[in-house]
Image (cartoon, rainbow, N blue to C red; front, side, top):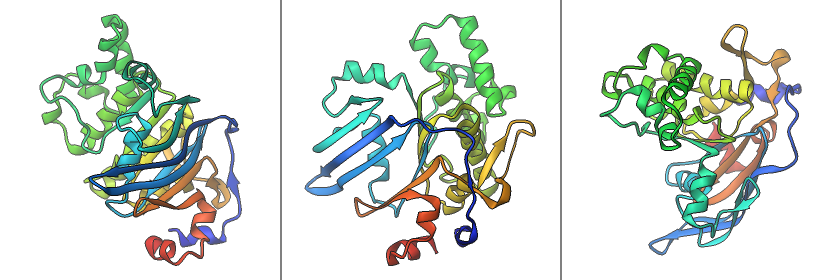
Length: 280
C-alpha cells in the first residue's frame, strides 16, 4: 500500500489548517529506572491535523501519549498543549485542560458495572450536566459511532469492537479540541479495525478535530492517509485522483528517538534504510 503512493502526486485539501499548533514537544526526555524511554523528542501538531505515531513495540509511543495528556511529567524539555506549558502545571490546572481532551484507550477502559449510557456520560456527570441534556448528548455520540441501540447494555455484553466504539463515543461526548487514540485497533480483527479507523476518519473529516493516534498496523495508517469520509454515504472512500490527505502526518519513533517527522509522501519516499525496512 505504501508503494502505491510513490506514483501519486495529487494532495487532497478540503480544510485549511490554522498556523497555531495545538501540541508542541520541545526536546522532551523521560527516563524510567535509569533507562531512557524518550530522548530529545521535538514535534508539533497543527490545528486540525491527525498525527499518526508509528514505531516498534517498546519505543515510547504510549509514554509520549501520556505526556501529552499530563499523566506523566517529562524529566527535561517542555510540552505545550493549547499554548499552555503543561510540564510544570499543577494538577488542578491540568484537570481543567483535560476537559478539552478526549482519550481512547487501547483496552477501552470502560466500567463494566455501569451501562453504556453512564460510561459515555461519565464526564458529563462529573460536570453536573442535567440528566436530560446528558442523555441527548449520549444518544448523539452513540449515533456517531453507530451504537445508539446499545445504550442500555453493559460493557461485558459487547464485542471488543463495540467496546472500542463506545470508548470513542465517550471521548467525543464533550466535543474535545484534541483526541488521543492509544492503539484504538489493538487486538481487533481486520474488519473491525477498519470500522474503527473509519470512525477516526469521520471525526477528522466531519468535526476536523486535532488528534494523535498510535497504531501498530501500517494498513490503518495508510487507510487514513489515502481515504476520506463521505457524510452523504456515511462511508469512507478513496480520495479523488489517487490523492492523499495533507492533514494526516506521521511521527515514527525507534528506541525512544524520532526517526521521521513529516507527511505521507515524504515517509514513503524516504531513503532511510531502517524506515524502508519498517514499512516493508
